[in-house]
Length: 339
Picture (cartoon, rainbow, N blue to C red):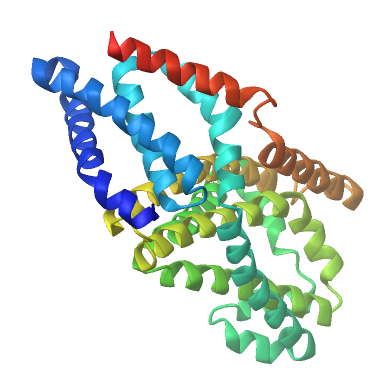
């Protein structure tokens, strides 16, 4: 059976389960009629079976993500309505966030390229001719004048108050990440623009600093917080590209369903990005402009990178015997519903 035939055959059942689950989420299980509660059990059992078939026969297809999300929502309504919310928070950080990052690595890679290529081009142009680089980014002239004069403008953070500066930095960084994410609904066009613009800006500033012999001062400021901050912008951009791709290429499921699946994954990433930017903002306000030696700032960058990517790449990986345990759990759930 082709995936398209499987979807057409089962789609009505999936949509009916989704409608009942949505009603239960809005009003609670007690709002459902006896017939609907019985129907919920039957449909849950049926869609769980469909998910197993899809994983076996159509691995890697969007329908697997859609059914996995639908089963998870239904399971939460049936069994976890009164569960401790703290367990969900622990599960999010222990497993959901790093797993989602690994599942969507291709979008993050595309986002990285859209940031990195303009950055390299901007660096090359500004290194050869800082004035030409300034023409690429309106409003960057003041920064380039500071670089030419050897002024470390970030030292004003020490004078303005680091706590206030940290709040301002966090707000600005979160705004950039939100723009990169939200731009996905415009077919990814705004996301691409935000990534390219920020990459070009960084490249022009770095290229001008190299041309004027100021690069050591600049990287001494950027190094400590740059790993987390730039990583988050790229991850948020990847989340936005997921939304755009779901609209452009929904696959064999509807655009609405594809967008729903992509939005859930993207939101898991975005919540993590916002929290990481709080950390980056604190480092940028308290460590980056400080008089600490360059070696200490580079050590901060290395440590933050190792911790961040060690967490994203390795946290939440199931042990080798997790699959049999999942099958036994599904069997227990089916037996409870049958009873």
